[in-house]
Image (cartoon, rainbow, N blue to C red; front, side):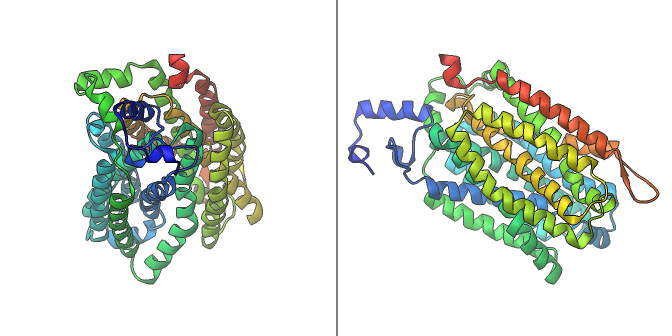
Length: 437
C-alpha cells in the first residue's frame, strides 16, 4: 500500500473520499486506492461465492424433476410452476425492496439477504409435500434475487471503473463453475443419498458465506452521504428518480430484452437435445460440463477485454456472435455428439458472456446514491423477463405424437431478432460522465 493511503484523513481528504465513492473509486477502510489493487480479491471471492450458491440453488431444481414427479405425484405444469415461482418471486420482492435498500450499508444488506436465503434453502430440504416445496422455492427466489442485485451494487461501489469489467467477469464465473462442479457433485449426492442433501449443503454454505462476508467485506455506504443530501428518502421521489430518467429506461429495456431472448431458449435446450437432436440422457452432463468449463475461462477473458476496450463495443461484438449459437441450437437436427456439444458450448460462452460488458456498462449509467435501488429494480426486471421468456417459449412449442418438439426454430428466430434490437438500443445508453460532459 502506498504511504499516502496510510496518512491520517483530514477534512479535505474526507471530502475527497466522498467524491471518490461517488465515482466508484473507494475501497475498504474509506481509503482512496493507488494504482494497485487493495483488498479487492477477498471481496470478489465472497461476492462470487454468493452468486455460486444462488445460481446453483436455481439450477439444481431442474434435473431433479423426475424425482419430484415420483415423490409428490405432480404434473408437468406443477413442475413448471416450481421452476418459475423462483424468478417471479425474485422479481416482485426486488421491486418492493428497491425503494428502501439504499438506506442501509450494503454489507449488512447482503449479510441479511444471505442469511434469509440459507434458511429458505434449508426449508426446501425439509419439505414434505409439494405445497411446502413450492413455498420454500418462492422464499429462496426472493432472497436469491435480492442477493444478486446487492452483489452488483457492491461491485460498482468498491471497484474502480478501470477494473470493473474484470471484477464483473470474476463474479460471473460463478455460473460456469456451478455448471462444471456444483451440478455434477449435487446430482451425485442426490442420487447417492437423497435429493435433500444438495440443498442442505447449500444452506450450510450460505451460513459460511455470512461469516466470511462479515469478516472480509468492508462497510459499503458512500451512497448514504449523497442520499442524506437529497430528498431520495421520499418514496415518490425515489420512484421518479429511477423511472423518469430516460437513461435508466434504456438500461431496463436492454437487460429485459437480453434476458427475455436468452430464456426463450435456455430452459428447453436439454429437452430439445434429447428429443430432437439425438443426444442421450446420460450424455447431458457433458453439456453442462464443457459449456461451464469453457465459460469459466472466457468470462474472465471477456472481463479483461471489457476493461481494455469500450464496454459498448465489447457488448456489441459478443451479442452479434451470440446470434450464431442461438440460431444453430434452435435449428439443429440429429447430429454427432461433438457437433451438439460445440453448439451448446458456444451458446453458454456467448449468451452468458454478453452479459459481462452489459453489467459493467449499466453500473456506470446510474448515480451512486441511486445505485442500490436501481440495481434492485434492475434485478426485478431481469428475473421477470426471464420468467416471461420461459412461459412464452413453453406456450409456443408443442410435442408431437413421436415425442419431437416443434416450433423451437421459431423461438430461436424471435430470440435472434430481440438480440439485434438490443444491439441497436445499447447505442442510446450513456454513462454518468457522458451525461455530465
